[in-house]
Length: 92
Ligand SMILES: [Zn+2]
Image 1 (cartoon, rainbow, N blue to C red):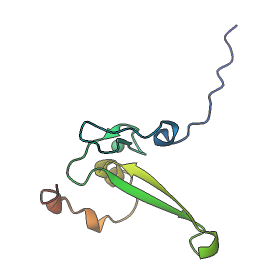
Image 2 (image 1 turned 45 degrees about the vertical axis):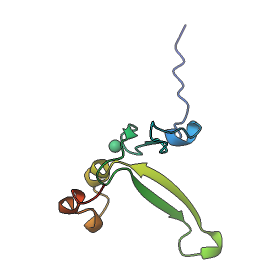
Image 3 (image 1 turned 120 degrees about the vertical axis):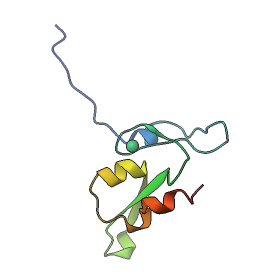
């Protein structure tokens, strides 16, 4: 009777909601990887910029995603030389 378990495609959650702000007026953002809200501390939030059609500037489109630095580190997405943990204490 309730056999239909069709699930809707999941869009990045940050795009499904209107922008809203935290108590300090900063945009609340959601992590692309774990989907949790990203607190403003250390390197966080980080933004990941995706550029489509990179080789053809006239067709380029870009989209920004937010992430926890730790989730990005754990994703194995390349060498994050600019996110040296030793520098984190000097930020914010
Ligand atoms: Zn995360």
